[in-house]
Length: 265
Image (tube, rainbow, N blue to C red; front, side, top):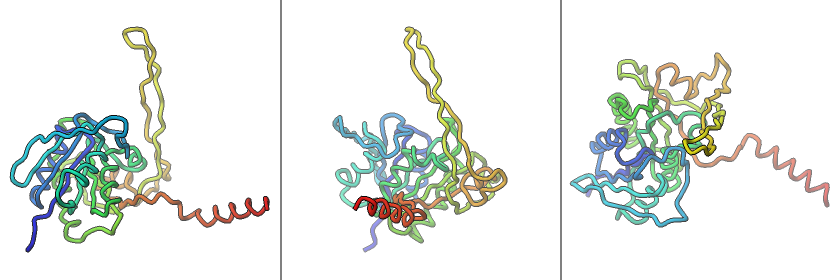
């Protein structure tokens, strides 16, 4: 007997974010949905989990094909709660987003959206994180919803290798303006943080995080990276795994270690 797929939807922008509403709307076409999110935005939480205070969960709504929860925890907490306590069966697919703002290049390291997707991959569940390149809370998710539908359909039909998730970033453009979808590598870049020293109305000093993204790819190069694709009006899709080992230097480092050890024998 064929059963309806169960799909977990989460995000890091909070339970009322329009991006999550758009993703749930698309996802319901593919199966039953269990959704969970935090009470408030959790951007920049990366793979944080809650260990110092109790985790609390509240059922927000329940109807045929859709169950929604809210938690005081992080995006990864929410995923773990569904896996271990809130669902009587393992989800067939995990979707995270649609995030307000880019998670391309090194932003993936800080992203609660992508951490939730990676938690799914760790647990052997095909997982996808979606992000729209707009921080506007009233952003138009029409085109990104269509992109999400296309990517979800492909993954449900073709699957993903075990332990792999997809990082999908979508230009803030109309469907007509988006030139297509590109499978990419992650651009070599980083965020250059700056802290502005400020004074609050009570005279107390505090610091406000600012900064900018620095792309280390060649000025006229970087073809095939997510940053290049987005700059050229393509959707970028980067396959990601959780193994951070630098295999290209692993053997070299081993030989250096052995050489150092030998000197002390």
